[in-house]
Length: 250
Image (cartoon, rainbow, N blue to C red; front, side):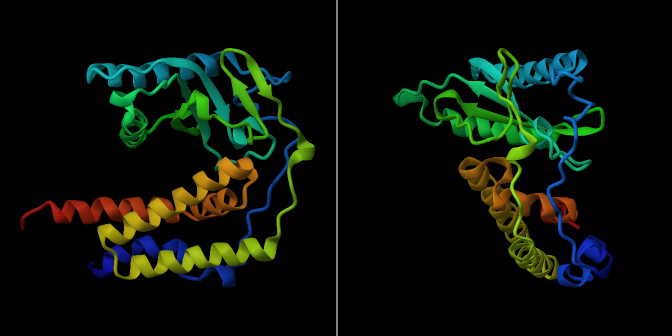
């Protein structure tokens, strides 16, 4: 890449250790007022737009003759808890009835592919909050999250300010520094394969961490710091540029 492409290195030029950036888990006094009312009920306008978003996702599947039997919609993550920040996404989980038979064992893979396509195609926000869509198998849904809100039933698991753990800052700083080092190595001589490997790895770290320990899982907190530092945003922009060059004839 030419020198001008080094603009993507802005967030990481000084190095994590020198900047001493540590994202602590902040505890707010209330749930996010953009989403919840004073009684922790989902705001009506937010509820309506979430249904619209899910309907659009289902419509795209139906256009390709793929059925999605939705049994519920959950809101999880920091915006269903007291630890939200300005960087927090609104995690909307479509809960599907996926009673697999031999002919539909790859249905979850198809749903995930469409979910990724949908998230990349649309830049959807609710009151300035980025919306991230997921599809979950009802039978495999866990309750490790400290806040789980059902669009059908209300709070399945109400969040608590007292369930937010302390973070080992030294361990956290070391882990983020290692991911930053990997990021800078990728951006020094970027290729699509290197970028994809980094992005897949950090998302895998997040997914495994959430499944095991919920949104306060160590790996998920590391992911959030990498995202906050704009490394994922930079990598995705770099990947698009690399792919455009790869598919162009000059």
